[in-house]
Length: 198
Length: 336
Image (tube, rainbow over all chains, first blue to last red; front, side, top):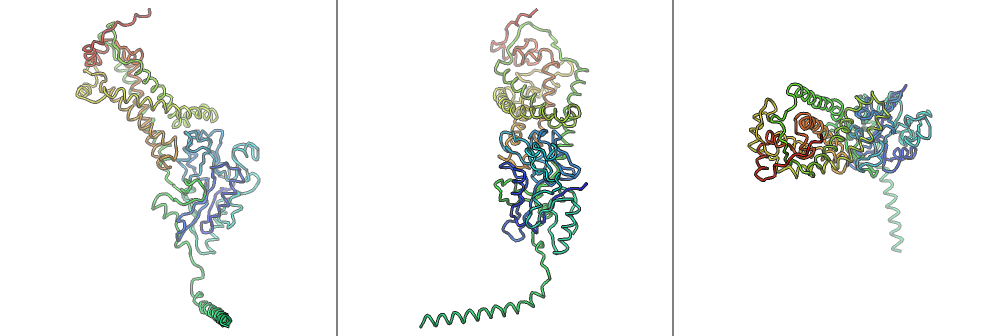
């Protein structure tokens, strides 16, 4: 099986936020929840870069480690998913996540945050693949249909790559070799404890 | 005629300007050719590792309304390690250690007996309001302690026994209990602070009491006022510890009102360490107030203690009560 990863080529991202919009639309994510967002660093200054960020589906994921009710699981494709039936909305995964990925429908509402929601790598949840129950809780399961995450699939500049870690790393390496520069795979060291040598 | 002349001059100017531009481009071409074939825009760009080294986090701007999501990366995994390893060790050692000490103490020293027997007369120690506040705080504390320990120790200890689904259901209710009972608990701590502060200021008698080990070992009875040094310690543990868990707890219950992620991590560390110490201290308090000492539970049970108990454990207080004329009153007739 593949080891699924995200890679945002910050030298290509133009901060169009189409990945954010596509994600919200594909999964019918409720108001106030953003599974993916584009962060611009040094906005308006020389050297500014934008990075599209969601759950990175970490190796040895911190969220899964700290979850008091053990609601996380890792699929055969190394996608980190969770069960909303088990989640008690305590917020611990949010304290532990290096990327701010976990989202709560009612943040700040008297401690009753509601069930945690996050990027599923378009791989749904523990329910049967493609079922109505799965769609309502976690959104579309594109992986089960043989498709990759929509955010990356429709990225206009092909900045955001999603797929098998070795393949997308190879694509990125080739790009860097051809164009002669690259600011690296953002978040990889934190998420996967490795970086791409270019 | 004048306007025609201006038009002619404009046209001439434009033609000359076009030629000048073409000439410039032609001149510039060799200059461009001398430059490297490709520029490196990342040479001047922000770099991930450099930003992380500077601040240990990467903050940017987002165009979506949720401005908190501008935090791109904060790789610190210290909190995870604290929660998974450090806290479990601290909690385990402190709580199991206290239980072990109490069991050993009970087996070797046994119950602290009422040495002069019961006098048959009682004296009011805590009135109904004091007892109400005590038991309100105490019941809240027990629920808070169990539900809190569940969050830290439930996963390794309970999930293997009852399974994921049952544990999740139980933890959901425990979380609600923890969140909502924090309010009466906090009110209880505030009331305890206010109503017993007068008797809990440390003074000279405490030095003597501590020097003589509180009379816990042997058959000593050092003099004490309404509260002895041990009780004063419990009082300040409740007031300061309770205050600390309340403040840090509300920081976690209302995320982002005052604390960000790092603030909440610190709050959780303080909350959990103070809480396990608090639980250990309360185990000792429960022990000495129940099976640990004959005649002690009545103080919070009926509110009246035997005069001989007061004489042995709170001699100075009993003298004060005698002076005020509020001491002697016959004990209620035994039920038998």
